[in-house]
Length: 380
Image 1 (cartoon, helix red, strand yellow):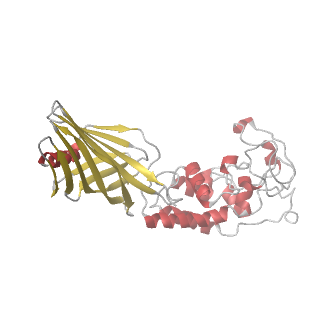
Image 2 (cartoon, rainbow, N blue to C red):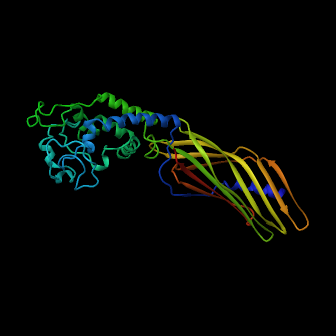
Image 3 (cartoon, rainbow, N blue to C red):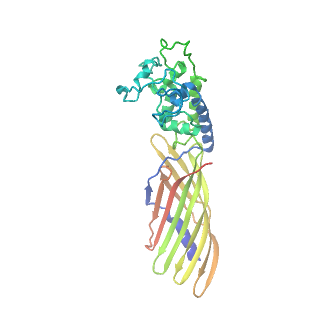
């Protein structure tokens, strides 16, 4: 049994240098539960406005000027069904090569009085592309769409303010006149209809969402849009293979849940089970053990770095029990034995990121390995 106990303890020493890092996916969302709750609620207020306010949703898929009436577009299966008929009737696509084929030049015949850009130059009217439609989008879907299209919080807030100095649809929407040429469509025929809330209130709603996420967009597209849950998946294996001993100890994958604080610090704890067995000379041996591990660290996300600095630590003694069967004797034993262990490492902080670790052994018959992975858990 002394051999068994010593062998199981040796397994945890696999967390040592010589790492091999494998490709990963989307970045981890380092928001606390309270930040996530606040950001989801903050964006739900934005979504309720964007998907119902005519000055917003009509330009983002609610009005299709290229069909008669309303409904689906027979020539564009990707276009959202139009819910409001275009007041100017069906338009033909008249692409302007100067606008890289993105703008129908015929729109400017009527929508020629948009608010100017911040530099004073004229704005150009257009409808949003299909992939930026607001039609029939729930809050999480629209939230992820806006994070994806904006790229960062500064760009998002700039769009809400004045379209980041580009074609000024925001101020045009708050004029309420659709940018129409009033000599063609006088106020008496097409009354101005301003948004239901002020521009300042819209800006405040946008800033509230950004503030709830710690002042910037973080993590993947779902971060700040839907609840997220992560774990550090940890497994290890030690093998002894020589003339007299054929033995393996395995720690199956343990998912240690990670909880974030508002400042990006994280922590978690989980209990690992070990199973080992094999032969030593003429004896067959089996053992089982368990031990509690904790993980802590900090997520760093700024303009210069995106990473997670981990510390994996043993928090309890090994609780070991085992049996042996030899030609002349058999028996078993149970013990608890303590060995300290803390293993620091740094990851990029991406879902699916894998760190493989090998520990060189003074005995060529012994190999130790461990596998660490960042896992995103399904949140109901």
